[in-house]
Length: 428
Ligand SMILES: *Cc1c(COP(=O)(O)O)cnc(C)c1O
Image (cartoon, rainbow, N blue to C red; front, top):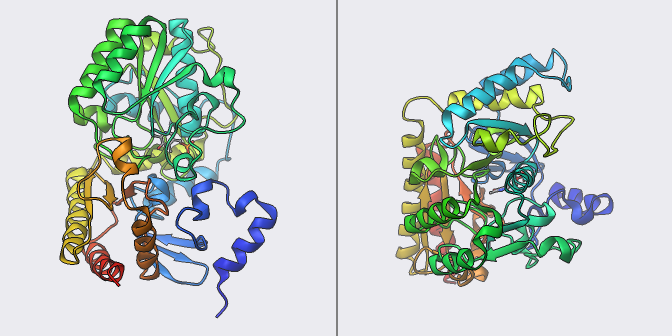
């Protein structure tokens, strides 16, 4: 049988750099050929060879309802009949803005964009305009999209490829970005005492999902909130991944720490390109046309994308949605940890909401250094053993995993059974 994935990947490399439109998709870190998908339904995917998979990537987060949810598809089809774009306001934008403001504790006003990258890039621009300061602070291993100022010691693909800081970013731009260690209160206090009144904003993934899954110490988030307030620094929670993923109100609701601004993406587009940034009204009012901070987008608030997002946001507000999702995700990680233990494999795992991390080390990591200290060779082998059995995990030891509301007990059981075999094979 010919492997269509392989043929397509070879041809793609002729026309697309590396054969992919986003680096992690290339499987460079785990080796082998990326899968070309042609269909998804609920928790399942089918590739070009008609092989079936249980999906734990969820398009990197957005597909929290599973693939091709009938109501989301219907909403998209209906709105598409009335034109795909106007470049002018629509009532749907108002509807989704109202909903975001209602659901996200820190948001008083919000503006829509078309990706998470645009959201974070625009948020730091507003923060800089609002404070009249240039410096920004981020944390090592956190990924905030690929804008110049934020591609400094970044996570996700940047980390996977060992290029956390990108070529092509001028030193003059990068010099304004200061990077601290996540969960390190001392480093944080030192930074603020040295230059707190020069820092425009601190941007952080309150729960990190881009150096695998790392949870914050609550004291660390509280200290960060206190220092930002004390020094007039805008605190930005980048919840592009965690928003509507770990809880309805995101990590800020879960930890009870409210930032000044929040960036969103992924789930709020339900699989279509939508991002958003918002926060306190006095900050957001600095945006054009009201204020001096320019920001714009031809397709911002696109009606079709917003329709998919709105329907998704409505469906996730059903009673017990997050309880069920969390429980299913816990079952998965507990079952896999158990399977590893029975095979004597050094392994740990954890979850929060519909998001999980698996680690080839004894205990779940709490810092960048600890995640770097996990067995990547074992992960890569495990990944391929699972893939062969039709289980699709992120192709890098630095990515978090995602469970959707479409995942069933049967999916979880099949995955745990497959993991048992994979762990067993690691001992060969
Ligand atoms: C995915 C992600 C982004 C970037 O979003 P894109 O839509 O890929 O541009 C930014 N921040 C975080 C935390 C993300 O997970």
